[in-house]
Length: 132
Image 1 (tube, helix red, strand yellow):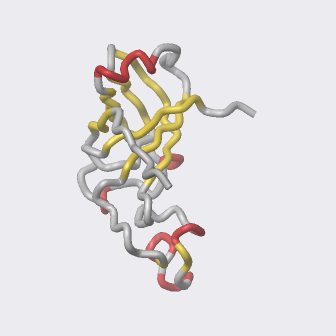
Image 2 (image 1 turned 30 degrees about the horizontal axis):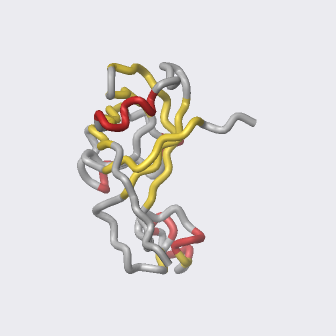
Image 3 (image 1 turned 30 degrees about the vertical axis):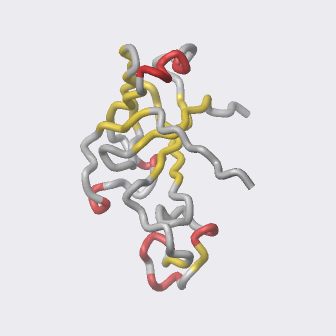
C-alpha cells in the first residue's frame, strides 16, 4: 500500500503557547489569531470571505502518537476510554478540527476567532463549513 502524503499548507499564529492556556474546545473559545497560508496555496483561499465560518484541520505536531487510552478531559473519575471515543489531542494521527470565524483576509493571512490550538501549529486543510 502506498504511504499517504500530507502537505502542510500553512501555520497558525496566536497567543496560545501552552496546553494549560488552551481552551478545551473551539466552540467555547473567543481567542483570535492568524492562519498564514503558504504562498503556493494562496489561490485556494479564493471564495473565502470575512464573516463566514471555515473548518480548519491542524496537525498537532507536539502531541503523543503512541497513547491509545485516555481519561476524557483529564477527569480520572470518568475512567479510561479509547482515544477514538474522545476529542483528545493524543492519537496515532494527531489531527485537530476547528470551526473558526473569519474576521478579515489580507492576502495569504486569515484573521480568525475561536482558536483552541497552540501557536506554530501546522495547518493541513481548510474546508467550507457544511450548511444543513
